[in-house]
Picture 1: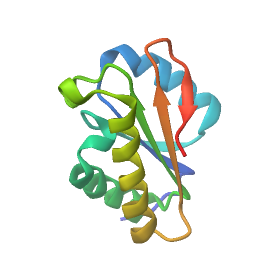
Picture 2: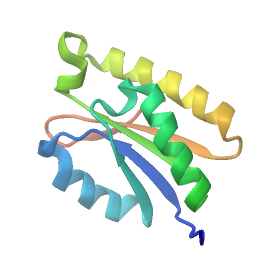
Picture 3: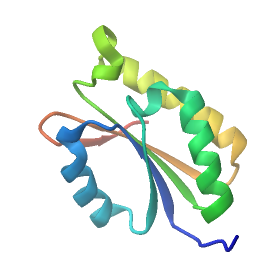
Length: 119
């Protein structure tokens, strides 16, 4: 199998309400990237790790970008910014341990399409 390089891999939710906005945002801010769509994005850490591993092996991205959003059905009653932030931070620690030297960015999008970086 021939390998190709991309700048980033983006993990985002499947929610149709954000699809067009995320596509435009990624074109402006991310460049060439692999795209992984998982319900809840950061909520299912095992799924994220499984699919990011494929991207890392096949395309060697230098950056992993996780995008969660407000009003996420996968989070159900626990759909708070704090819950998203805690999951994203835990996921970042796992990814940084697995892929040292790869930058992990965390983003949160509101229903008004305001993107906030999560520290």
